[in-house]
Image (cartoon, rainbow, N blue to C red; front, side):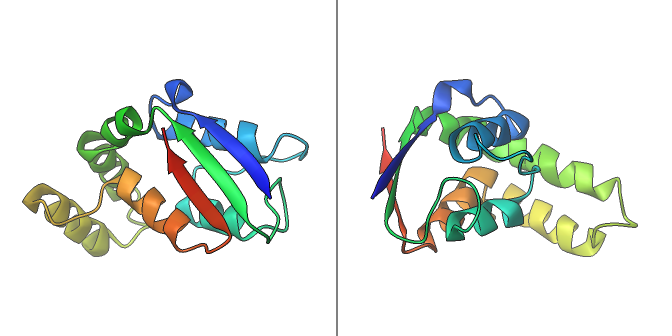
Length: 128
């Protein structure tokens, strides 16, 4: 069983979240994860970086503060940035995500991260 610690005090936005993820899970790789929820999901399966398929424990310090930091405003900015690239992203889908978020029905970036972690039976998350 491997144990990893996310130092939440180092997380100030989405960019620094991935800097911390790379520090924790990719220290010996000659490449780093990009700012991608799909990449985070792939990482948690194991096979590259520090995570192996067996049981892993992630201790996430400063958890509640990170919930706020990666909350509504950050998520809104994340989606609005995607609207600026209609050639890459489905803007109707992104606008639906924005509308859901504003109505209180959509997931924040933080909640999406938790959903991804929760989908991996080889990961146990401990909130600190």
